[in-house]
Length: 472
Image (cartoon, rainbow, N blue to C red):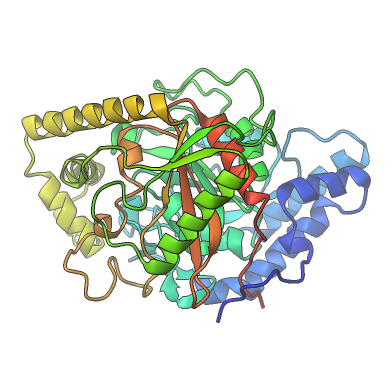
């Protein structure tokens, strides 16, 4: 059973900002922090399967180098010495990137870092390992033919969500305070909600991405952390430019930490429990989101219950998503395709049935959706929704037991629309269900309003206790 009260904290439970302050004060070293993260991985990961690779020797080498810099009073980079995990979708120098797939040969040269990894390395984060993903990050839960099932840290019989489920479980259990994940339809926000952590899908292009995703401009990289402040700090680092991403935005001119604690007084905020989709929402989730809206009113925002006037774009999202999946496996032989996750194999076959006209129609729906949300945000600064309408369900399944629909999009209707519109959206913890499972509040802003989304999330976070799952 999950803990629903603040737990006693150890070094492994410190946030990145707390670690950096302790390093600066000489109260703690990166070696001690990395040793604590590695011990926590050894103790906690067997129950959840968050890591597919742990490289203790390389992590300790990085930590010792960081310790020497701190002892000289010369830290290099904004994350110097902070234990960090990398989702096994990102290219990482020296480590194989297998993407949860039996079709990728691990015995090849791994010489490149993806942009997010390169920025973390330049800022001297300590890389402890790579976290699990469903095969090619195709679905909203985390299990794969290669790496097995990733489980929820609050209740290992439940799913951690996905596709960045390993990253979310790792952060929740203190197996490194920072993680980087990907989000093409909710893949940092879904597991953040299920595991009780913070995760941001920033405005498309804010975080450079390479190689280009077969899912096109639906795909984002995103920071996954325990607190909003850490998320803002990571976004500062991850937003730095990389010439390999042709669609990246210009880097920001100010820090996302600036003004983070200004609050929400005077903002106009909409709350919609179902986006107008008539989606059934679990009563515990509905109560938590409604209570969160009251908190924003108490903080001085003007809050109105209103739907944004959109329809569920799931069929058009499927065209874009399934066609992207088909593209991602086009190079495989018939024998290799038989090694794929059966669900992935199925959507790839479906993706091949779409015409160019189908794809253009889906793109047109996407543009109209973006226009509608742009108009909505002329009136409302932010939109509050549940991140997902249900708590975490049985591990190892794509959909809850008894679901009439076979695909993960049937229970994630509040996340993928904002990949289609490229808007920033964050999931923050907003309490637990009656049986102790985390609930996520999603805060959505207009494109380029990442700082405002972070500011609102921080204002709400400061009113809530930070609850953590039991750790061994």
